[in-house]
Image (cartoon, rainbow, N blue to C red; front, side):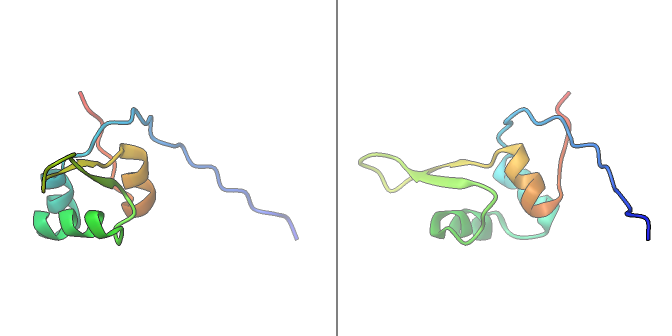
Length: 77
């Protein structure tokens, strides 16, 4: 039997930080759901880092991780 090969063209990742609100609209979940999921490590498409001496967090959701976990990719113009 002949082996089938499938080739896919990967998006051109830039490391763009996909905003929480953009992710919220894309996956149909509330922004706070995403923030808490990132803080607890449940959502794997980004990182939540607590600011020093603060209760606030910074979020980083690189376009490649978002694509790998959700299939979503948007080209920035």
